Image 1: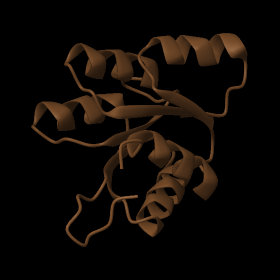
Image 2 (image 1 turned 45 degrees about the vertical axis):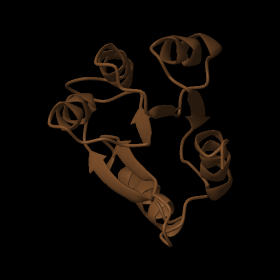
Image 3 (image 1 turned 180 degrees about the vertical axis):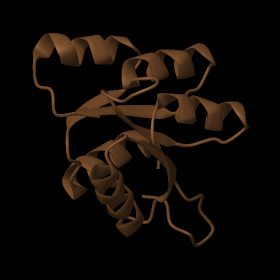
Image 4 (image 1 turned 180 degrees about the horizontal axis):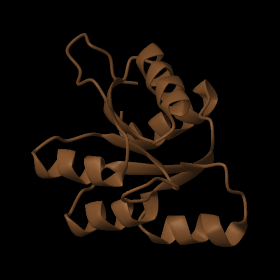
Length: 129
């Protein structure tokens, strides 16, 4: 995992309309040393990227108002965003998960994220270290 002593810090964007989940995920990432920012829906996430922000990891909720996670993931991929995008949802039907994965996800996790889920995601990001 990246550390602040001369190595790059990992940055993350938490995209979720649920205030409690946003807080849980943001605090969990911070506790693991990951700088993070939050967005309330997919449109905010896309706007942040269009304004020049870059993130190593995007934690994307599936069901949100304005622009859902599937639309936002497709849009980000269409913009050429290469961040690791992890979809999160309470949905467990394989068809719904597959639809989300097909939008361009790198990984899918059931809500809420836990330390062990995040650490497994970080291994994917840091596979070269």
